[in-house]
Amino acid sequence: MTADTAGPTLTAVDSILLPEGDTLYIGNPYALVVDPLDGSFYISDIFSARVLRFRRDGSLMLVYGRPGEGPGEFRGGPRTPMLIDDSTVAAQVTSSRRVNIFDRNTGETIRVVDFPALGGITPPVVIGQDIWMTDFELQRETSLTRWRPATDEFASMGGLPEQYAASVRSGNWSYATLFQIGSLAYADGRFVQGWSGLDEMFVLNLRGEVVDTADIPVARRKGVPADLRERIDIERIPGREQLEGSSRLRQLFPRPGGGFLFTHHDQMALQMEPRPVLTAKTWVGTLSPDLSQACVDTLVPHDFEIRPMETFRGDTLFVLDRRIDDSEKLQTWILMYLVSDEDCDWMSTRPGG
Image (cartoon, rainbow, N blue to C red; front, side, top):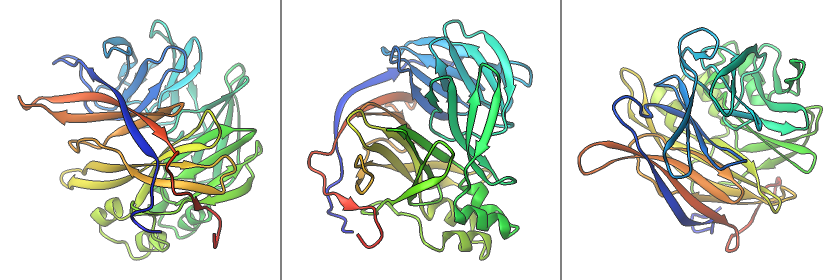
């Protein structure tokens, strides 16, 4: 692939400043999700251990949860917000697999559920009465979980990709745990699942079985080296190289007219001690409806004060961007871009294509 291959076109359509103060601000965002009913924004913040909900004008609407270890509390912060139905919002605790469930309209805690699954970076998929989500479980090596909230019945299925299974067999597990973030989308009776440690995406049926594979081509992003797992598990390359040496799949969403949109991050460590502080280049790509072709690697314009978070709704990309203003204050913006594949150079996702 060549660096001048045309990727999707991004057209800026709007930007929203989120007003923050000394008592309430976004300190360490984990995920951004758009409410499908009213378009409001949910931001899970590890620093404040809360899920913050903002209106489309940027004003604060509701707060879900608080720090702590009891019902409705997040020790270590919340993971990706789950919009279960028109009255219920949930989020998994980062330090455990417990899920806090809240009233969507009041923020009150409804109940707590112990999950067998470690959810991914994308929101769960709602199909009828069932909630489907990525299941990263090294012991049983499953990749997909179905949750039925009415009865709290869980079913885990599918298998982890070979690179992850090999990491488990090696006894090291460093690769598998470093790239544990999974992404899941659903359209036309099939799931598409991807992992942060692979360029491939997998098509799954409702039993979690892999029925097809799409190998996402690389034009400008770093991509994933073929020997990445061995370099991490066996050669034990330095921490900075582990963080910066490959692209990581992040978001994966169906498009209204068919196909899928996705993002990759090329991470950069601003510092390594006492703990890594990361930013990233963000790349946008799209898959054709039959997954046989991809248009890849358009760079998203944003500042690099901290790692961005992004999501999709329809054909719109929403980017949570942090920037320092002229008075040295950190601002949080939501940037919106319309994604088009009209001028794309499509490339095959098939072996030898």
